[in-house]
Image (cartoon, rainbow, N blue to C red; front, side, top):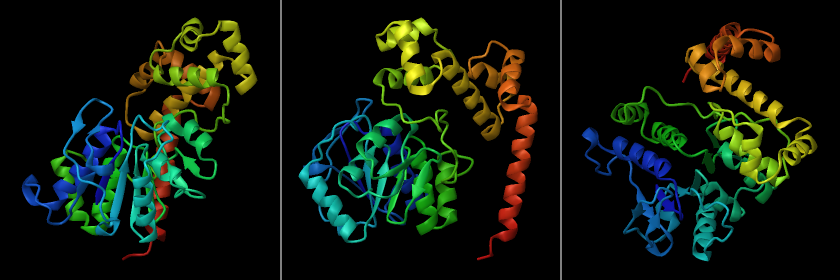
Length: 332
């Protein structure tokens, strides 16, 4: 695997994925490239600074893409920069033409899309950059309903810890389940998440919002789900009056900022009830409710059942689905 680091790349995503390969490649964490091999590259071999400030150097120049089975493009905070160096564009096109599979790690998918290699394709992006990706690449089909998407010759992930799961997925494919488990034990992980595990995002099903003020407000609200900001605080963050913010939300979403914030918190609670074993009281606090009784009333008013009843039903549905898959999937 060749890792191509971009400016401001996310260290956790790159580090997690390359460590999966390292731990699967050799026994005892000795890092010999036996079962898997990797090379860390950049355009012209230049140093690359991560988004947290750590710089990697020296790096290897891009070289021949035919040397690799996979090329992972690792992005981060530089995704709004629409310039891609010609040498990198040439490298990615050469890789695609030779059947080398491309991996979009974090916002590395933006660069793959800028090369025109994601047009008409389903891609996975982090929920925090969905709007920007949609605007920049209308010919692609970005999604935030799972942590990574495998399109055969193009695999894209949301970034952060999802890169670890994508790495384990590839190790399991090429080196076997025992090597994937070996890496998981070293990384103190209990299991590998499947591609279709949902991202913890809570603004899905919203229409595309073109008003920059509303988009900025939505991001601010999402960052503070456990501590809901007052209307005047949101307005100050965006740089408008409270009345202007209310009018903007009504025009863009046909609801007030308060209603949107409440729906988002309840959607987050619904996700936590379905996907985690967190106690209901803890979920209430994490979703910004003052107590469990307040949370239960609000949740029941929207979803028609108490949080406990909803969780019980969600678990029963998953068990039925798992049993159905087990009985319909042919044995190897």
